[in-house]
Amino acid sequence: MDGQYGDSTRSVKSVASEVVPGQAVAPSPVPASTFHLSSDPSDLQDSYGRSSNPTWRHLESALAQLEGAPSALAFGSGMAAITSVLRVLAKPGHKLVVPADGYYQVRRYASEYLAGQGVTVVTAASGEMCAASADADVVLAESPANPGLDVVDLHHLALQCRSRGATLVVDNTTATPFGQQPLSLGADVVVASATKALSGHSDLLAGYVASAHTDLMAKVERERLHSGAILGAFEAWLLSRSLGTAGLRFERQCHNAAALAVALRAHHAVRAVRYPGLPDDPAHRIACAQMKRFGGLIAVELADAAAVHRLVERSALLIASTSFGGIHTSVDRRARWGDDVSDGFARISLGIEDTDDLVADIEHALG
Ligand SMILES: *Cc1c(COP(=O)(O)O)cnc(C)c1O
Image (cartoon, rainbow, N blue to C red; front, side):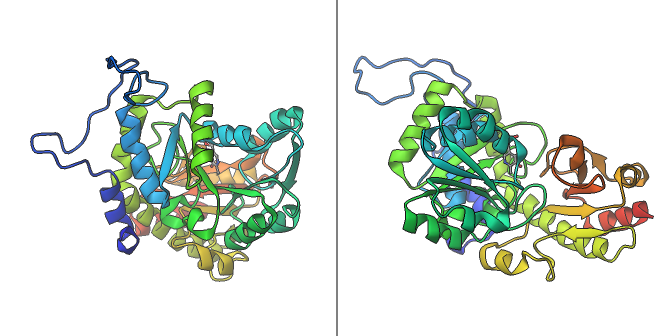
Protein backbone atom coordinates (compact mmCIF):
# COMPACT_ATOMS: atom_id res chain seq x y z
CA MET A 1 0.00 0.00 0.00
CA ASP A 2 2.77 2.44 0.99
CA GLY A 3 4.32 1.86 -2.41
CA GLN A 4 1.42 3.71 -4.02
CA TYR A 5 1.93 6.88 -2.02
CA GLY A 6 4.08 9.82 -3.04
CA ASP A 7 7.19 10.82 -1.10
CA SER A 8 5.62 13.50 1.06
CA THR A 9 2.73 11.23 2.02
CA ARG A 10 5.27 8.51 2.91
CA SER A 11 7.26 11.03 4.96
CA VAL A 12 4.26 12.20 6.95
CA LYS A 13 2.90 8.68 7.45
CA SER A 14 6.29 7.33 8.54
CA VAL A 15 6.33 9.51 11.66
CA ALA A 16 2.59 9.41 12.43
CA SER A 17 2.00 8.38 16.04
CA GLU A 18 -0.53 5.84 17.23
CA VAL A 19 -3.99 7.40 17.57
CA VAL A 20 -4.70 7.55 21.32
CA PRO A 21 -7.25 10.21 22.33
CA GLY A 22 -5.70 12.74 24.67
CA GLN A 23 -2.10 11.85 23.73
CA ALA A 24 0.23 14.20 21.88
CA VAL A 25 0.17 13.93 18.08
CA ALA A 26 3.93 14.53 18.08
CA PRO A 27 5.71 12.27 20.60
CA SER A 28 8.14 13.89 23.06
CA PRO A 29 11.73 12.69 23.46
CA VAL A 30 12.43 10.29 26.33
CA PRO A 31 16.00 11.08 27.40
CA ALA A 32 16.14 8.32 30.02
CA SER A 33 19.27 6.40 30.97
CA THR A 34 17.32 3.98 33.14
CA PHE A 35 13.73 2.72 33.49
CA HIS A 36 11.65 1.20 36.31
CA LEU A 37 12.03 -2.57 36.21
CA SER A 38 9.33 -5.19 36.46
CA SER A 39 9.74 -7.93 39.09
CA ASP A 40 9.59 -10.48 36.27
CA PRO A 41 13.04 -10.57 34.53
CA SER A 42 11.50 -12.11 31.40
CA ASP A 43 9.48 -8.91 30.74
CA LEU A 44 11.00 -7.41 27.61
CA GLN A 45 10.70 -3.76 28.58
CA ASP A 46 13.02 -0.82 28.24
CA SER A 47 15.64 -1.11 30.98
CA TYR A 48 18.76 0.88 30.09
CA GLY A 49 19.26 3.69 27.55
CA ARG A 50 22.05 1.95 25.61
CA SER A 51 19.78 -1.08 24.93
CA SER A 52 16.51 0.48 23.78
CA ASN A 53 14.19 3.40 24.30
CA PRO A 54 10.84 4.59 22.92
CA THR A 55 12.38 7.54 21.03
CA TRP A 56 14.59 5.19 18.99
CA ARG A 57 11.64 2.91 18.28
CA HIS A 58 9.58 5.72 16.79
CA LEU A 59 12.51 6.80 14.59
CA GLU A 60 13.50 3.26 13.59
CA SER A 61 9.96 2.41 12.58
CA ALA A 62 9.93 5.48 10.28
CA LEU A 63 13.34 4.67 8.75
CA ALA A 64 12.31 1.03 8.17
CA GLN A 65 9.12 2.13 6.42
CA LEU A 66 10.99 4.56 4.19
CA GLU A 67 13.62 1.97 3.17
CA GLY A 68 10.99 -0.77 2.69
CA ALA A 69 12.59 -2.92 5.41
CA PRO A 70 10.99 -4.87 8.27
CA SER A 71 13.34 -3.15 10.72
CA ALA A 72 16.00 -0.47 11.07
CA LEU A 73 18.55 0.43 13.75
CA ALA A 74 19.57 4.01 14.54
CA PHE A 75 23.20 4.94 15.27
CA GLY A 76 25.08 7.99 16.50
CA SER A 77 26.42 8.80 13.00
CA GLY A 78 26.63 7.34 9.51
CA MET A 79 30.14 6.08 10.27
CA ALA A 80 28.91 4.39 13.48
CA ALA A 81 26.30 2.52 11.41
CA ILE A 82 28.68 1.58 8.59
CA THR A 83 31.58 0.46 10.78
CA SER A 84 29.24 -1.60 13.01
CA VAL A 85 27.92 -3.48 9.97
CA LEU A 86 31.44 -4.02 8.63
CA ARG A 87 32.67 -5.35 11.98
CA VAL A 88 29.79 -7.83 12.03
CA LEU A 89 30.21 -8.97 8.40
CA ALA A 90 33.92 -8.72 7.50
CA LYS A 91 35.82 -11.42 9.39
CA PRO A 92 39.49 -12.50 9.22
CA GLY A 93 40.17 -14.20 5.89
CA HIS A 94 37.27 -12.46 4.17
CA LYS A 95 37.56 -10.27 1.10
CA LEU A 96 35.83 -6.90 1.42
CA VAL A 97 35.28 -4.57 -1.54
CA VAL A 98 34.79 -0.85 -0.84
CA PRO A 99 34.35 2.03 -3.31
CA ALA A 100 37.51 3.81 -4.51
CA ASP A 101 35.39 6.85 -5.45
CA GLY A 102 33.05 6.85 -2.45
CA TYR A 103 33.07 8.38 1.02
CA TYR A 104 36.77 8.52 2.01
CA GLN A 105 36.46 7.68 5.68
CA VAL A 106 34.90 4.29 4.94
CA ARG A 107 37.94 3.42 2.81
CA ARG A 108 40.26 4.62 5.57
CA TYR A 109 38.45 2.56 8.21
CA ALA A 110 38.71 -0.54 6.03
CA SER A 111 42.41 -0.10 5.26
CA GLU A 112 43.52 1.26 8.65
CA TYR A 113 41.46 -1.02 10.91
CA LEU A 114 39.81 -3.98 9.16
CA ALA A 115 42.92 -4.87 7.12
CA GLY A 116 44.81 -5.16 10.42
CA GLN A 117 42.17 -7.68 11.59
CA GLY A 118 42.98 -10.02 8.69
CA VAL A 119 40.37 -8.76 6.21
CA THR A 120 41.58 -8.42 2.62
CA VAL A 121 40.44 -4.95 1.56
CA VAL A 122 40.02 -4.21 -2.14
CA THR A 123 39.02 -0.78 -3.46
CA ALA A 124 37.16 -0.50 -6.76
CA ALA A 125 35.71 2.47 -8.64
CA SER A 126 31.94 2.42 -9.16
CA GLY A 127 32.35 1.27 -12.76
CA GLU A 128 34.58 -1.66 -11.69
CA MET A 129 32.49 -2.76 -8.73
CA CYS A 130 30.96 -5.84 -10.39
CA ALA A 131 34.28 -7.10 -11.77
CA ALA A 132 36.11 -6.54 -8.47
CA SER A 133 33.39 -8.30 -6.47
CA ALA A 134 33.49 -11.66 -8.24
CA ASP A 135 35.13 -13.57 -5.35
CA ALA A 136 34.26 -11.18 -2.49
CA ASP A 137 32.57 -12.09 0.80
CA VAL A 138 31.30 -8.59 1.55
CA VAL A 139 30.68 -5.77 -0.94
CA LEU A 140 29.97 -2.19 0.09
CA ALA A 141 28.64 -0.09 -2.79
CA GLU A 142 27.76 3.59 -2.75
CA SER A 143 25.48 5.00 -5.43
CA PRO A 144 25.58 7.76 -6.54
CA ALA A 145 29.14 7.84 -5.20
CA ASN A 146 30.15 10.82 -3.06
CA PRO A 147 31.68 13.06 -4.40
CA GLY A 148 32.04 12.08 -8.10
CA LEU A 149 28.38 10.96 -8.50
CA ASP A 150 29.06 7.89 -10.62
CA VAL A 151 26.31 5.26 -10.38
CA VAL A 152 26.61 1.51 -9.66
CA ASP A 153 24.21 -0.93 -11.35
CA LEU A 154 22.80 -2.17 -8.04
CA HIS A 155 20.45 -4.82 -9.41
CA HIS A 156 23.20 -6.41 -11.47
CA LEU A 157 25.65 -6.28 -8.55
CA ALA A 158 23.02 -7.76 -6.21
CA LEU A 159 22.38 -10.69 -8.58
CA GLN A 160 26.10 -11.38 -8.80
CA CYS A 161 26.59 -11.16 -5.03
CA ARG A 162 23.63 -13.47 -4.42
CA SER A 163 24.85 -16.09 -6.89
CA ARG A 164 28.30 -16.15 -5.23
CA GLY A 165 27.10 -16.00 -1.62
CA ALA A 166 28.48 -12.52 -0.94
CA THR A 167 26.64 -9.96 1.21
CA LEU A 168 25.84 -6.67 -0.52
CA VAL A 169 25.70 -3.54 1.64
CA VAL A 170 24.58 -0.32 -0.06
CA ASP A 171 25.30 3.15 1.31
CA ASN A 172 22.10 5.05 0.45
CA THR A 173 23.17 8.44 1.84
CA THR A 174 23.28 10.47 -1.38
CA ALA A 175 20.14 9.00 -2.98
CA THR A 176 18.05 8.75 0.23
CA PRO A 177 15.11 6.30 0.31
CA PHE A 178 13.16 8.85 -1.77
CA GLY A 179 15.68 8.52 -4.60
CA GLN A 180 16.11 4.74 -4.51
CA GLN A 181 15.35 1.70 -2.38
CA PRO A 182 18.40 -0.59 -2.55
CA LEU A 183 16.64 -3.46 -0.73
CA SER A 184 14.04 -3.64 -3.48
CA LEU A 185 16.92 -3.82 -6.01
CA GLY A 186 18.29 -6.88 -4.20
CA ALA A 187 20.76 -5.44 -1.67
CA ASP A 188 21.04 -7.31 1.64
CA VAL A 189 21.64 -4.30 3.85
CA VAL A 190 21.23 -0.52 3.60
CA VAL A 191 23.51 1.75 5.60
CA ALA A 192 23.28 5.55 5.53
CA SER A 193 24.14 8.81 7.14
CA ALA A 194 20.96 10.61 8.21
CA THR A 195 23.16 13.63 8.93
CA LYS A 196 22.56 14.75 5.34
CA ALA A 197 19.23 15.18 3.53
CA LEU A 198 17.07 13.10 5.87
CA SER A 199 17.68 15.36 8.86
CA GLY A 200 18.31 18.21 6.43
CA HIS A 201 18.88 21.11 8.82
CA SER A 202 22.65 20.80 9.40
CA ASP A 203 22.11 20.48 13.15
CA LEU A 204 22.71 16.82 14.06
CA LEU A 205 24.62 13.65 13.17
CA ALA A 206 22.90 10.27 12.88
CA GLY A 207 23.06 7.05 10.92
CA TYR A 208 21.05 3.88 10.40
CA VAL A 209 21.07 0.29 9.17
CA ALA A 210 18.07 -1.38 7.52
CA SER A 211 17.72 -4.99 6.38
CA ALA A 212 15.31 -7.90 6.12
CA HIS A 213 17.92 -10.38 7.48
CA THR A 214 16.77 -10.81 11.07
CA ASP A 215 19.87 -12.74 12.24
CA LEU A 216 22.15 -10.09 10.86
CA MET A 217 20.10 -7.27 12.40
CA ALA A 218 20.28 -9.01 15.79
CA LYS A 219 24.09 -9.09 15.49
CA VAL A 220 24.22 -5.43 14.44
CA GLU A 221 22.02 -4.52 17.40
CA ARG A 222 24.41 -6.39 19.72
CA GLU A 223 27.35 -4.58 18.14
CA ARG A 224 25.61 -1.26 18.86
CA LEU A 225 24.94 -2.31 22.46
CA HIS A 226 28.57 -3.34 23.01
CA SER A 227 30.31 -0.57 21.09
CA GLY A 228 27.95 2.06 22.51
CA ALA A 229 27.68 3.79 19.11
CA ILE A 230 24.21 5.05 20.03
CA LEU A 231 22.12 8.05 19.06
CA GLY A 232 21.12 10.47 21.82
CA ALA A 233 17.39 10.72 22.50
CA PHE A 234 17.24 14.41 21.56
CA GLU A 235 18.93 13.77 18.20
CA ALA A 236 16.59 10.84 17.58
CA TRP A 237 13.62 13.07 18.33
CA LEU A 238 14.90 15.91 16.10
CA LEU A 239 15.51 13.45 13.28
CA SER A 240 11.98 12.02 13.56
CA ARG A 241 10.68 15.58 13.48
CA SER A 242 12.71 16.27 10.33
CA LEU A 243 11.59 13.08 8.57
CA GLY A 244 8.05 14.43 8.31
CA THR A 245 9.26 17.09 5.84
CA ALA A 246 12.08 15.07 4.26
CA GLY A 247 10.09 14.03 1.18
CA LEU A 248 9.03 17.62 0.52
CA ARG A 249 12.55 19.00 1.00
CA PHE A 250 14.19 16.32 -1.12
CA GLU A 251 11.75 16.91 -3.97
CA ARG A 252 12.76 20.60 -4.05
CA GLN A 253 16.46 19.77 -3.72
CA CYS A 254 16.27 17.38 -6.68
CA HIS A 255 14.31 19.92 -8.71
CA ASN A 256 16.92 22.59 -7.94
CA ALA A 257 19.77 20.23 -8.83
CA ALA A 258 18.23 19.29 -12.18
CA ALA A 259 17.74 22.97 -13.13
CA LEU A 260 21.21 24.02 -11.98
CA ALA A 261 22.90 21.08 -13.73
CA VAL A 262 21.43 22.22 -17.06
CA ALA A 263 22.50 25.84 -16.43
CA LEU A 264 26.02 24.83 -15.37
CA ARG A 265 26.58 22.67 -18.40
CA ALA A 266 25.77 25.63 -20.65
CA HIS A 267 28.07 28.03 -18.76
CA HIS A 268 31.45 28.92 -20.28
CA ALA A 269 33.25 28.96 -16.89
CA VAL A 270 32.33 25.32 -16.19
CA ARG A 271 34.67 22.59 -17.48
CA ALA A 272 32.60 19.55 -16.59
CA VAL A 273 29.37 18.62 -14.79
CA ARG A 274 28.22 15.29 -13.38
CA TYR A 275 24.55 14.85 -12.47
CA PRO A 276 22.87 11.46 -12.97
CA GLY A 277 19.69 13.23 -14.12
CA LEU A 278 21.36 14.87 -17.16
CA PRO A 279 20.36 12.86 -20.25
CA ASP A 280 23.96 12.78 -21.53
CA ASP A 281 25.55 11.91 -18.17
CA PRO A 282 27.48 8.60 -18.48
CA ALA A 283 25.43 7.19 -15.57
CA HIS A 284 22.02 8.36 -16.80
CA ARG A 285 20.83 5.04 -18.25
CA ILE A 286 21.50 3.04 -15.08
CA ALA A 287 20.24 5.91 -12.91
CA CYS A 288 16.90 5.88 -14.78
CA ALA A 289 16.57 2.14 -14.24
CA GLN A 290 17.07 2.23 -10.47
CA MET A 291 16.40 5.77 -9.21
CA LYS A 292 13.11 7.56 -8.76
CA ARG A 293 14.83 10.91 -8.24
CA PHE A 294 18.40 11.83 -9.13
CA GLY A 295 19.37 13.58 -5.91
CA GLY A 296 20.33 17.03 -4.70
CA LEU A 297 24.07 16.89 -5.46
CA ILE A 298 25.98 18.12 -8.50
CA ALA A 299 29.70 17.56 -9.17
CA VAL A 300 31.26 20.43 -11.08
CA GLU A 301 34.75 21.25 -12.30
CA LEU A 302 35.91 24.86 -12.52
CA ALA A 303 39.33 26.12 -13.68
CA ASP A 304 41.06 25.97 -10.30
CA ALA A 305 40.67 26.47 -6.53
CA ALA A 306 40.51 30.26 -6.95
CA ALA A 307 37.54 29.93 -9.31
CA VAL A 308 35.62 27.97 -6.66
CA HIS A 309 36.44 30.59 -4.00
CA ARG A 310 35.36 33.37 -6.35
CA LEU A 311 32.05 31.63 -7.02
CA VAL A 312 31.22 31.57 -3.30
CA GLU A 313 32.38 35.16 -2.74
CA ARG A 314 30.35 36.61 -5.60
CA SER A 315 27.21 34.61 -4.76
CA ALA A 316 24.54 35.96 -2.43
CA LEU A 317 23.09 32.49 -1.73
CA LEU A 318 25.94 29.95 -1.66
CA ILE A 319 27.80 29.07 1.51
CA ALA A 320 31.12 27.23 1.67
CA SER A 321 30.69 24.24 3.97
CA THR A 322 31.35 20.55 3.92
CA SER A 323 28.64 17.87 4.26
CA PHE A 324 25.41 18.19 2.25
CA GLY A 325 21.64 17.80 2.21
CA GLY A 326 20.81 20.89 4.30
CA ILE A 327 18.26 23.57 3.51
CA HIS A 328 21.05 25.94 2.35
CA THR A 329 22.78 25.49 -0.97
CA SER A 330 26.44 24.83 -0.20
CA VAL A 331 29.72 24.27 -2.01
CA ASP A 332 32.58 22.01 -0.94
CA ARG A 333 35.91 21.96 -2.77
CA ARG A 334 36.85 18.33 -2.26
CA ALA A 335 40.61 18.53 -2.95
CA ARG A 336 40.76 20.35 0.39
CA TRP A 337 39.94 17.03 2.12
CA GLY A 338 42.28 14.90 0.05
CA ASP A 339 39.73 13.36 -2.37
CA ASP A 340 41.34 12.21 -5.61
CA VAL A 341 39.92 15.10 -7.70
CA SER A 342 41.27 18.25 -9.36
CA ASP A 343 41.73 21.52 -7.43
CA GLY A 344 38.74 23.10 -9.19
CA PHE A 345 36.37 20.19 -8.43
CA ALA A 346 33.43 21.16 -6.20
CA ARG A 347 30.40 19.30 -4.91
CA ILE A 348 27.34 21.53 -4.85
CA SER A 349 24.57 20.53 -2.47
CA LEU A 350 21.25 22.07 -3.42
CA GLY A 351 19.09 23.54 -0.70
CA ILE A 352 15.39 24.35 -0.77
CA GLU A 353 15.67 27.96 -2.00
CA ASP A 354 13.54 28.96 -5.01
CA THR A 355 14.92 27.45 -8.19
CA ASP A 356 14.96 30.64 -10.26
CA ASP A 357 16.75 32.58 -7.50
CA LEU A 358 19.48 29.96 -7.24
CA VAL A 359 20.09 29.52 -10.94
CA ALA A 360 20.23 33.31 -11.54
CA ASP A 361 22.53 33.86 -8.56
CA ILE A 362 24.98 31.10 -9.50
CA GLU A 363 25.05 32.01 -13.21
CA HIS A 364 25.88 35.59 -12.20
CA ALA A 365 28.49 34.53 -9.63
CA LEU A 366 30.30 32.34 -12.18
CA GLY A 367 30.77 35.50 -14.31
C1 LIG B 1 28.60 11.67 5.27
C2 LIG B 1 28.65 10.31 4.72
C3 LIG B 1 28.93 9.22 5.54
C4 LIG B 1 29.27 9.38 7.01
O1 LIG B 1 28.21 9.87 7.73
P1 LIG B 1 28.38 10.65 9.15
O2 LIG B 1 26.98 10.89 9.60
O3 LIG B 1 29.17 11.90 8.84
O4 LIG B 1 29.15 9.75 10.05
C5 LIG B 1 28.90 7.96 4.98
N1 LIG B 1 28.64 7.77 3.67
C6 LIG B 1 28.40 8.81 2.85
C7 LIG B 1 28.11 8.54 1.41
C8 LIG B 1 28.40 10.10 3.34
O5 LIG B 1 28.16 11.11 2.51
